[in-house]
Amino acid sequence: MNTATHNGATNRLTLEFTAKPSSEVLDRIKAAGFHWHRVNREWFATWTPEREVLAGALAGQVTVVDEAPDLEARAERLEARAEAAGAKSAQAHQKAESIGAMIPFGQPILVGHHSEGRHRSDLKRIDRAYQTSFEEDAKATELTRRAEGVRARATP
Image (cartoon, rainbow, N blue to C red; front, side, top):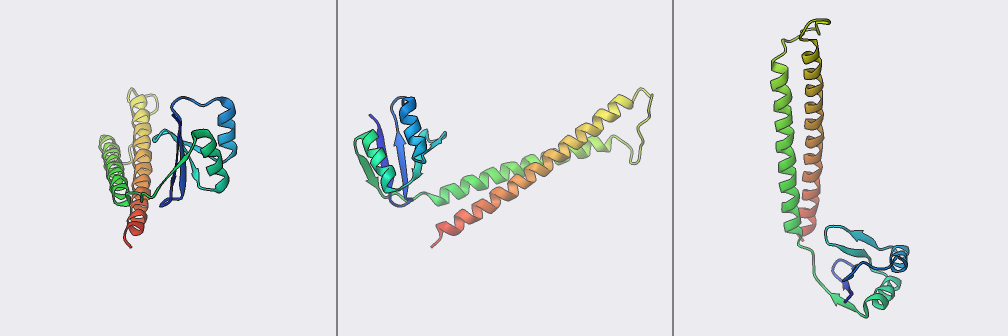
């Protein structure tokens, strides 16, 4: 049985289907502004009267609930992800440093020498490790910023 829910606390309308809807139904849902949430496995949209009428027609009735999101748990999840990204950043940075420590400072690439290929590949590995480190650090910073924003909304 299909279900439709209107959450008054979040002003969100959700649709859940027991089986994959037909292409005509999918077209109607998408045209009404619903989006697929791949984690929750449901269609969702901001509540409007038109969307509620459509949801009621597809599910039979719309159940009204008033559940506030657990912002504290969300902030904790974001902080855990930020911590993991920070650890990956530090690990990648350490990897780049350890590879770079094997090459004497200022050592040119010895063209034609048996070590040329290894030197070039080490430089590429160092570059990739630093790039990963920078990306993960930026990700950690962004996740921390988002967690702070969620915590600010959680406290009245």
